[in-house]
Image (cartoon, rainbow, N blue to C red):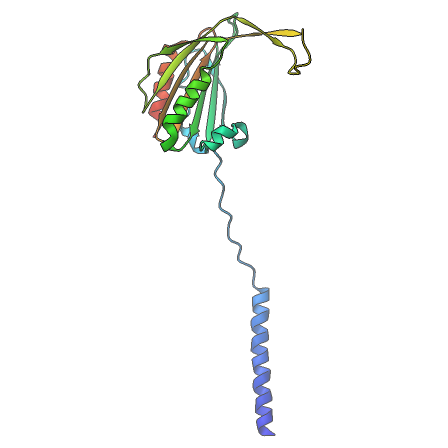
Length: 217
């Protein structure tokens, strides 16, 4: 009888200890690990962007922001696009031909693919059949910088008012602007500076490109 009492006592104590352990585990707050913050594509590229201080006289900063993956083509993403940033400036608003605009596009691609990407971007940007393209001297920035200008063949370009190929005979005119473009890269960062308008000139854009290149790490 004494042995049975001792055995029951041991069983009861073990049950109490096990129950206390279960209760403690159930009542203990769950440890929640913080979710790592996802980097915004292009957020680190903002430090390479030109600022209002860098802009030519009479030019105003009108846009400066990171680009999202949804804004770029599937081809760019397939080539390794991993971030982008764009800045825009506008000047000479009173010109009869309209304002002249400067766009700075900064993107990140794998450094190993950069040579091919530079060539692809230049070929694509020079393919505008409404411009007479002229190669310009390399600005000598980075590993393979290049430049060209485009002269509008006609100031007014007539196009269909609708994208529907079944509709015809209805045209609208749009103003075609001259362009100057400089493309350069350093390691995994690629930049395109494009000046569009009647005041587009290589000397002004090259000065901006030199400032932009100096900001690259």
